[in-house]
Length: 201
Image (cartoon, rainbow, N blue to C red; front, side, top):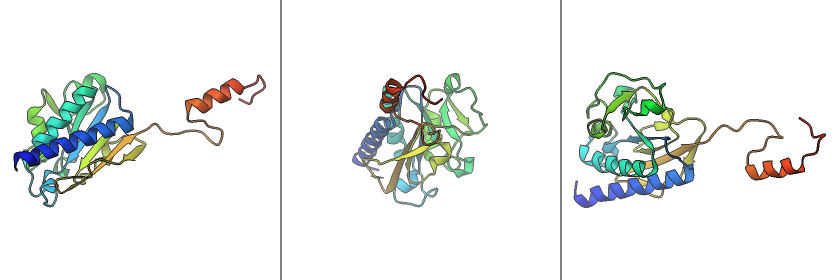
């Protein structure tokens, strides 16, 4: 891959992640899952032609943005490792209920992206599953199983990275209650101010 193509990949990933962080309202300490098919990026069927060359600019862009916003990254492995995830060991400090699994991702079993991440994170470990606050999927790798409920689609500014489609999602808390439930602070404040001593409930 040429330097210009690699630069375009990095720029596209960074642009999309910044949009996802903004529309999803992500805050420091939250989890961001990244699913990538480098095969799809180069125009081949998923799982057939992975390349570390495409993984590198994605990793670097994601790491740069995550550090700026204080987010934890999780890189999804391919189906051969049951879509386990590569994360930093210190994630356990904040999320102690994660379950580790014993495996080292390689390009043919784990995928190029997860393999690259495992070798370039400071203290990588592999966990079976997470509930991320948001995620980006480059090449239809099906990250939905790792997004917490309720997932909300987000439109990526850059819809294709190489030949791969990009989808993104963030999560929001579940809305609960019936017809009298209120979901915005402004309406809640109005009703609170208007409340009288004999108000129901």
